[in-house]
Structures are given as C-alpha cells and as structure tokens.
Image (cartoon, rainbow over all chains, first blue to last red; front, side, top):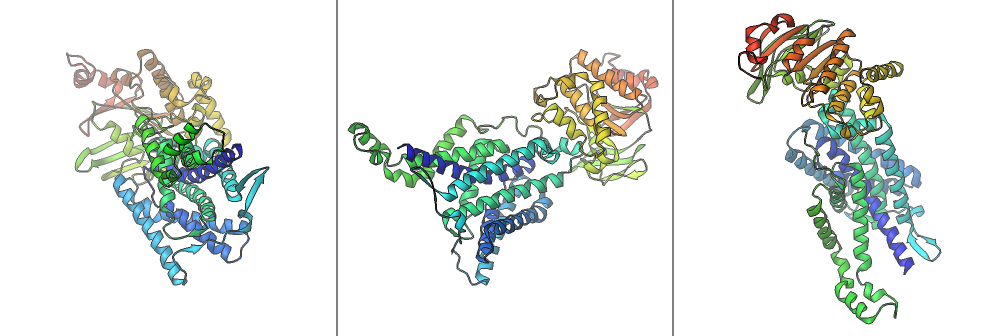
Length: 324
Length: 239
C-alpha cells in the first residue's frame, strides 16, 4: 500500500513538473504583456516534432535535445517578433485572438510539412532508449520518464528561480511584470526583456514537449491543446502572472489529477481484511473505478472551488495590475 | 540643456498639450506648476518617451529625442521619477536601486552613486533587504528618488514627490531636493505644493489646460497676483 502511494506521488510530481514547465512560460509572458499566449501549447508541439525529427535522423539524445531546444527557442522568438511585437499594447482581446491565429498557423504548418514529407497525421514518437523502461527502488516501480520529468522540472525551475532573483536581466523581467512603465523609466530595454521571456518559455516548453511525447508515445499537430489548457489552469490557480504561482499551480494540478486517479476504485484495490466491509462498500459506491474517466471534470470542479475562495489564485495578489 | 518647442500631445482625439515650449539650462531647478489635469505629468511622460508628441520638437543637449525610445533617453541622461512613486514593491530596496543603474556599465561609479544615495537617505541603507512594498509612503518616495539617481542622470524629472506625504516627511523630501540642487544637478520639478516648489526653484513655468500661461524667476512669481490668487491661496481661493 505504501509502495502504491509512493508510486502515485512520483506520478504526481512528474505530471506536476510538466504542467509547471509549461505554465511558467505562460505566466512570464502574461506578467509582462497581459498576453495569454495560447500558442504556447503549439510551441511545445513543435518541440516534439523537432525531437522526433532529430531522433529519427539517428542523433543521440543529447544532440537531439540541443537541436530541439534551439529550434523551439527560435520559433518562440520569431513568434514574438512577427506576431506579438507589432500589436503590443493593443486590447487584450486582440492579443488573445492573435495567439489563437499563431497557434493555428503552427498547427497547419506542421500538418502541411508532415503531408509533404509523406507522413501520416499521427506518428509514433521514436522514444530514446535512455527514457524508456522503468526504475526500481526496492519494490517501488516507476517509469523512467516520470523520474526524469520530475528531476528535469526541479532542476530547470530551480535555475529559472536563480535567474529571476540573481541576474539583472531576471530582475528586470520581474520589474517589467510588476510595472511596465516604471521599468521603462529606469532604462530597462523592454524588447530584450520580452524576448527573454519568450525564449525561456519556449525552451522550457521544449523540454516538456519531449517528455510529454515520450509519455504519450505518439505525436500529432494538435497535441498542444490539452497541455496549454492545463498549464493555463495551473497558472490561474497559482496566481496568474507570478512565476512561483505557476510552479505551485502546476504541482497542485498534478497532485489533484493523480489523487483522483489513485482514489478511483480504491475500494476494490484495498487488500482483503484491511478495512471493515462497510467502509469498503462505501468506497466502492463513492469512489468507483469509473471515476478515473471523469478525472478532468473532478479536477476542474476542485479548481473552480479554489477560485471561488481565492479569485486571485493561491499566490496572487488582488492589487495585481492596478497601476496599469 | 533641455528644450521643448511647440510640443503637442493627443490622447486619441483629445489634445492634452497645445504647443508647449520651455527650456531648462544646466544646473537649474525649474518648477512646473499648475492644477490637476493641466498637463504637467503628460509633459514629463512625453520628455521621457512614454508618450509621443504629435507635433513639435524635444531636444536634449542639442539632439532630437522626440522619437527616441525610453531606454535610450535614460541612457542619454534623463531620469524620470514618476508620480505615485511606482517603486517595484515585490523587489527589495537593494534590487530597486540595482535596477536604477540598469542602463550603466561603470560598476565602480555605480557603487559611488549608491553611497551618495545612502548619504541622501540613510534610512534606505537600513531597509536594503526589505521588499519595497513594505516601506512607508515617505520611504517609498525616498527609494523612488534614489532609484532615479542611480542612473547618474544629467537631468532629473521629479513628478509630485510630495504627493500624499505627511508634513514632516515632505520637509525631508524637500531638504533632499535642496541638497541635490546644491550638488549642481539639473532638475525639472512638477509640484502641486506651490509654496515648496517656489521655495526651491530658480525658475517657474505655470501650466493651465495644456499650455504654459506664465513663466519667470520663482522670486517674481511668488508675488505675482495671478499665482497668489490661483495657487498660493491668497484672496480666498484655496488650492
């Protein structure tokens, strides 16, 4: 039973890391520009395709990761330069619609490319050997990719924290998120700060994309939709615009999802004699194994409840954006 | 040093500045006074490039800056301490001051300027690790001025430094402004507290509904009937 719980915790941390890696990209951009970049999921999708291409071409994992991260960061920077910079300062709705358009262009561009290459829409992801298989800690068995996801999430988010608290560019980014005009008045180069936010967001999304693709085993041009939605929710729960909030929200979301999955059908899973029969039948009635298929619905209900109590998110402040 | 010629600024269809012209010489402390909505803050925001003039020219030391981006204007030597302080409340005092010097590369001189700011506002040195948002209003104003000084400006724009401050804190801020003037700095001061502004300023421009309507040495304007009537509360009209 303890083993089962530990395995689930690892799963939660793994899922949470992926959500957090995606959510911080959304949060950084929103913090500075008030732009909800829904194309962020498609940036992640591009990363998965770049990784599939690089791995398929026979590159070792390390080189494939470099190709993928560099390529994705370039896509992120181009997206900012071509689509978002010209409409900076436009009404929020205009920016939101632009992000949908960018997402469509990335999806259709990928679809077109796969067609031209004679590939089907859905392709199997050539998972590298290093990420396949399982890791055993005594009697606990978890997929290797989950452990890697968790470790990658912690390391990268730790580095991001160092960046935004220690470096001048990182501090400039936080200053711009707090008060864009005041940041301009002290001489911060806003274009540089915005480009940095997009570049870092794309780089983190790239790593998430690779790990997500390994977990799913397959990729398609529309695969970014669910992750960006989840990342958005994670960022909102944590307090939109805050990096720490996005990270926290990501892990909260991961834990909620795994909790729902782990508890569904728990009545059948408990060893015979470990609980009184009344308790078992109660659990079977209220936490049936079919609950797992309603995972997202249950999770979203919990999230709605969180927002009812704290509309500004867990780490958010009510005063956010007051000086606009 | 700074010269505005016939500057017009529009917010959509509304004209906020109707051809404003004035100049500031090296080492001068010039006050821009006028009632709410007269266009004082708009003027400062246009000088620092947050707003664009739809007509007219702004030159700083002979160079046209009316189309320059704000970060470039800062690196040329104009530092704008905005109305309402606008410090970064989630960053520490030390980080706020560090960002004030973001446009510079000369680390030794930056360290000297940090000491200069501590000399001006010793309180800031005790609050270095504190988040800016936890400071009192007066301390935040000190931080905002300190942050603006960290770029080692050749021209300092101060927008309403007395806004919302208790009288004793206000005195401290104006002492600091006098001290800065004594260092030979060039300052453009926007103030609604006309008494204090006239006390420290060399010259004064009076703005009304987007126009400069009066100008002259502070000493003279103090006794100008129009200024006394409108801004100094003499003759029954309180500010």
